Length: 233
Image 1: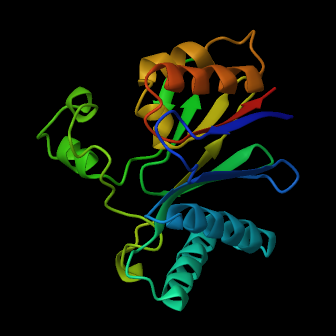
Image 2: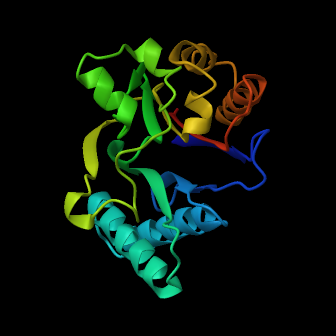
């Protein structure tokens, strides 16, 4: 059995919530998309990504293929509108079937696994992550870097030939938790703070999500924040 908590909040400094999410235990699909672009385009891009991934997974396609179809939908929509401003979105998506999970992502929305300790499963497609990988800065320095919000991959923006949809799979065991979130959470709450809340097993999954979003708002709420938490019980 999967216990599932979810919440999205506009944050304290934005007028629009350009994040979107989806969760359906029957389909075994959960996702978070964080849109970007002016004039509400980010909101459109994240919704297009959500709808396309759900549609394609229902049709039997893999998460990776579904995300690539979502990219095509966003690009097609942008061309039809013929607007000069691009629109794009990150996405992190999760499928669970028979306690096996498949994870796929583009951008810097994250997935974490809790198995008594916190482990980041996804790897950010971001400028600062490239600097970390090169050994130029530490992860702690990245948190305060002026370009920490610059993503290097996004649906609708990256050339489709260069689009890097990363994926991995694993098993969700009893007592373990999977967390999906937009960077509105990780911008304000570090891994230690996330781990401290996921360790509180007396909380329901929804209560844990509520606390995580509250922590992001207490930290400044500089962006939209979306959190999904799955717990195998």
